[in-house]
Length: 353
Image (cartoon, rainbow, N blue to C red; front, side, top):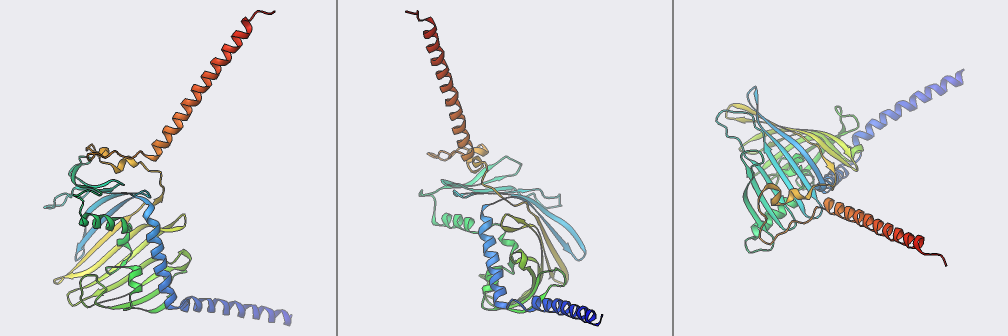
């Protein structure tokens, strides 16, 4: 009996030590350099994978002066990608009626392997051409090419993953940014709370002003270091803004994808507090089975540029081959059937010797 009591006490002690050391390990491991590398690598992986996302998502913007929050704008976004050099971004405004605020026009930006075009519409589907350029022609300038490259190289949803004005990986790669502390998050189980601080003139790109950013984020190691939420304050001599990001994610194939992002900022306008809140609800998915006709002007009732013939939709092209093969099979079957009947007819009418 004494021996059994001793075993029980030892087992209890072992369990206590296990759970205490597990909590301590979560709080102090891995080291800050590993944390920075993991978060940067996770974000860079995300930026690469989402280039082949298809998505339809809605963005709602709210603003508040003191306590009263109003819905300022609603926009519905459509994004289509194809690895053969196609990209389409469509933004449809669905703004609420606000006094003295004109409705924003719908906008569509599109790139295909032969040219790019930009459309606007004050009413749904009444598209007007605002600009287009055919690649390799005299009217397609270096400025146009840079704009084209910027669009193709900037990953979708890049604006969601920023600390201040910098993408997360660039922020943590910055030599002026330090991780001050790593703890187990008390709010999000299984996540690390990473407290950080940055000071310098390069935290706001292009501004060249002294600024500081300090805050924290919760990241989940079990979800490839995806960020669950973050909060930070940006200060300069001119302003002070507090920012809060909250993310809802889900697994799509090998990627942790964002399906909801709420971004709030808190600042001062004179003596009054001003709050802005942007809520983005997303429906990301991986597929290349898309309608390529959407990437050409003729889809929107507009003429194609001189000498340009839209490329066939792969889907329709494959269907043509299938139908052609089927028709050929039916034709050959009919020919063979006719020849067989003809042969049998001749055999049956041939007089015996």
